Amino acid sequence: MTTPPPGGSLLEAIGGVPTAAAELVVEATDVHKWFGRLHVLKGVSMTVKRQEVVVVIGASGSGKTTFIRCVNHLEKIQQGRISVNGHLIGYRDVNGRLVEDRERNIARQRQEIGMVFQRFNLFPHKTALENITEAPIHVRGVPEAEALETGRALLARVGLSAKSEVYPAQLSGGQQQRVAIARALAMKPALMLFDEPTSALDPEMIGEVLEVMKELAREGMTMIVVTHEMGFAREVADRVVMMEDGQIIEEGTPEHFFTNPTHERTKSFLSKIL
Amino acid sequence: MPVTPGSLLAVSNPSFQFDLKFFLNFVFNPAPALLGGLAITVYVAVIAQLMGVILGVLSALAGMSRSWLFRGISGIYVWFFRGTPVLVQIFLVYFGTPYLLSGFDLFPNHIAVAGLDLRGAILAGLVTLGVNEGAYMSEIVRAGILSVDPGQTEAAKSLGMTYRLTMSRIVLPQALRVIIPPLGNEFNNMLKTTSLLSIIAVEELFRYAQAVNSSTFHSFEAYFGVALYYLLLTTIWSWIQARIERRLGVATTGSGGGRSWRMRMLGFANRSGQGAGGMR
Image (cartoon, chains in turn brown, purple):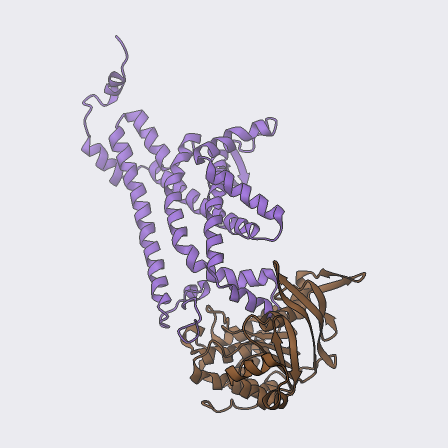
């Protein structure tokens, strides 16, 4: 790998493994989603246990990105239910019918779910450190001094101590993505979602981001990762999920996918990306 | 003897000629009333523009809200105030509202506001120009908000920010860079549009020129002289605007040096994108 792993434990910087209340962190049952008439999720069910790392693979358009965006309610779902830490996400159950929850409640639920985007989405008008402290201070109400301390510790752990006062435009893609991971961690989430975190990166920067993610996985963060990085999957995934046409068509350990994938689509997909 | 316009003018300006001395005196030795008019012009323009910005932000947010009621209110507001002449709006507000309120005069000659004696016509003018300006600012702010990458909103939401926090701390500061240049043009217009308030007897700059004209019949001297004063105001403003935009220009190249806190606050310190390394 290009960059040595960042110094020290990532989760130590935020006070240890966030204690998820539930043993099952994510519980998605029969999730359906339509974009207009397009049926993009056709009954996806998935559970993620505490400290488990699930890698979701599949061709573009298979619904994998849409699915993890539903997990923090960036997308609405039309059928089924998704719970995180035992709490229904985005909806309230009113006599068996699901009604979209209030904005404030949804915002509170999202505090427990970190998300890392393909295109980083750092706030360009804030420094690296301000990007990290923004939400702890203004959403969680953490005292500024404490937020700054945590922010600096996180930056150090992703190997960017020297960049705390720098604006995103002055950082490389890999550096930006590492700041984005630190930003999500600063909220001490019980679950981290990664939406193709290395797809927008130049090849030589992929390694440094994957190193941070592997470190996080080893330290026990619960993660759902949409990626095509099978090396990452082999090293840290507990489970790999293959999606095709809005459905999960195969699920198993990384070894299973590398040695004897059963589904024809999985075989042809893996032969293209490996 | 028939009274012709010419014969009237001849009364106090018998030579009917450009009076250089009068003109120079008008411009370079301004009467206190002229300076008073200048002050009213500037202060009405600034306050009306501020009102316009506030109303514009509210209207833009309402227009982009999920509620059809808010969208409808914003739509009708912008439609009406952009679609009718501001002069008509001034008359409607100042002369028209008492008829709507069964004779109650919203804008009496003297209004005590926080211990100050405010002329009703000024208040009516401020309200009309501010509300009119809000309709234009609404579109400008809307364009500014739409210029911000939707990924910014998603990132803010994913961190647990509410709509209000997302707008105030993430989206609007970034929209400002797009809003500022047209806002400067709007204020240039506003400085000049205030002259319309002369018609409801607000004693601003142009009203003073009219008074000089009618008492001395030095029409050219008074109107050209006051034109120069407007030119002075808009020139000063252009200079200020150019300075702001030059800073914006420097900042958008991504160079880090020389950021003032103001520029940082406005989000000008950096390019809005995600940097060369990352964007597709």
